[in-house]
Length: 156
Image (tube, rainbow, N blue to C red):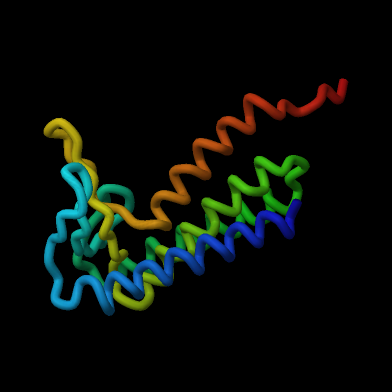
């Protein structure tokens, strides 16, 4: 299961960094908003905080502190993934780890995370996000699903 989880993490990391490279170097040069559909735009937003801009600040230590926390959590998730007995859990943890490391790379390179996917429906507007953020959210949902589907056996 560990190799499967690592492969998922590597694939997410590669897809995330490739998508950001394409957006930053080709699509958003110069930065602008591009309406793709009536509910989806491509935009360029630099997120200096965590999810939805929480804990955002302009401190020079901010990106390093958030990166350190993300890497520590990723290390813990990697240990959990090493012990995973089910395919769903290994894939789920790989999604979260790959997404977290993708955003850490942005923080180290740019001091902020590049967000560019912008959805809006019926007057409700989600904060812009990226491939890594999507992988993290999907991974967390699947970890919770795994907790319901693959219950640990009683050891009594």
